[in-house]
Image (cartoon, rainbow, N blue to C red; front, side):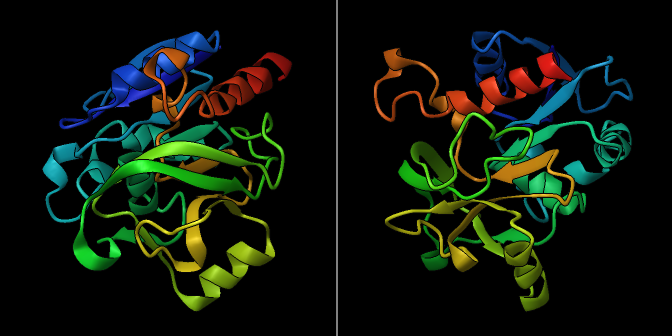
Length: 224
């Protein structure tokens, strides 16, 4: 159970991601943005931060990193992949997920604990949740408002590809309260909240609701 953790220049949460994976029983394998080697990993985590300083658009430069020439075809072939915050933005820029993340409504940076609802518990990263379950995860972003054209939104809704929605309040103005989505195959998931920051009781609020992401992928890999 080897899960790659990608580091771009400006990535902030790679060590948190690696720790969350280790706590779930997986081996966290560092993957450097400038390499062409996935090191035989069984899944990949693209963590949050400000890759390449978020110049142009968030994730726009990361889309062209050498490692992405390996990650994109691997994801298209079924490799499980999770992108959180900046990782979600990169997945959209790489067209592994539809839509885009733009400036928050009101143009304010948001940093708080946020309730989200699980709407799809059948992806590679969500099987240890129940559909309709509400969990609390931290959010910390300035460009997290999910947008897509009407046709894309309708397709996401009709096919059950909205994985998470903001519950109680919408911190950034995302269309349809969307907090996270998946691709058609269910192996690629992107979301703005940070499950890697909610895996240890030692840190207090928001608790350990993020553990389900990592236990889900470990269970899938064990049973593969």
